[in-house]
Image: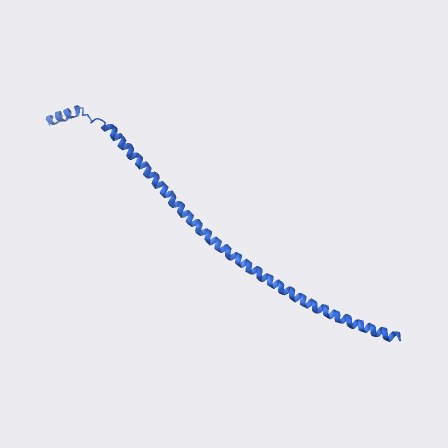
Length: 127
């Protein structure tokens, strides 16, 4: 066992030399891996942002389409109601003018009869 300990001590005591430039190459490789990992994280973050933005845009577009459809239906309904109200007002005015004209004609007939009666009275009273 003592031999083993001595052998282990001798092995650890010997300074092992690394091949020339190995340390720099390892550092470069580690830096390259770290850079690739950061780029991958940025790429995943961008993809996530694009994905969420796409979903949000789709939702907003869908809401806009449904709201526009509802607005368009409301405008058609309002236009229809306005047209109905216009027709109803025209009918009411037509009825009013028809009745007004009938009344004017009746008044005109009464005035003619009154004029005839006045003429007859004047004729009879002047004799």
